[in-house]
Image (cartoon, rainbow, N blue to C red; front, top):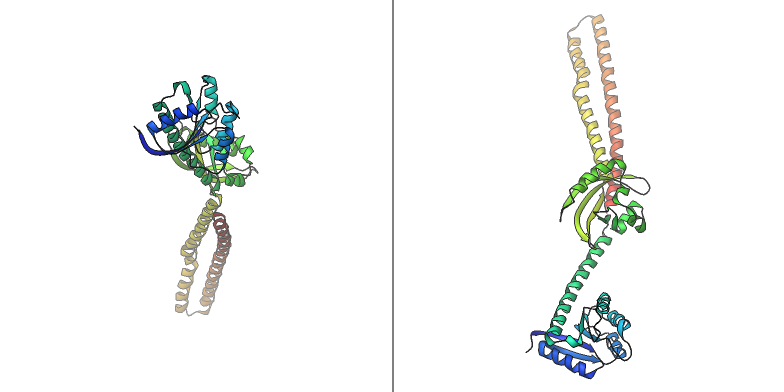
Length: 351
């Protein structure tokens, strides 16, 4: 009775006709076979596997072939079967040999003397499922790696226990000036000024003991050439090659912060101009207006002459105030042009 209705295409590499017949019987009893192909020698198997066929779901390999045996045979077959699970069927009962075989990339190691239809069926089923999971994981890691290295912003992964860099992307190498090898020989402490260490240690304390933590904050970093930059950090805890690690996205916001400071300085200048207009200008202007009114009511020439002197004094005072406003405005305009240039440069860098 066929236990699994999924159709399998199987390659059996076996020179002994009796062993092949037994395997075939076991397969027919438990598995829905699509195509069953046999190779009697390594040479035949190599021709089949190197012909471009990639439709095998499983390869069953005997380790005692006429033209190749043992470890060399395993290495050769595994090299051809990148996406196909390989199950070894052998008479070797050496446990150490079996363990070493598994380390070479085979999916399972079955002894012929202990082989049953059910054990073979389970091995095939488990091996194919493990391969699917492994392939999906490999594809996921590949996509992660592509996104990681293609990111236009600096990214890195560091070990939470040792703080050493585990991986960095091309953008980080270009922006910070360290080579990939230099990064991997450093810890995250090495890209920070000493004054920043207490803040970083406080941030790290929040991470320890957490299985998942997404956080964000602004930190100060130091490039290889000594330049100090302000960085917006976004981070998350991950498992990286069996280690507790953290992946970091670092966005240099130095120019953005400088631009904001420039805008704040300009606003301060505008507030100063507004205060001058509302207070200092009004004082001489009010005196002039009052003197003009008095001038209309005076008949004596001497008094008019004196009044005109007062008007002239107030007018000169008003002129000095206006010159001061002009100077401040000119400074503000110069700063505006500088800020516009800074904004344009920042926008170009963002692109």
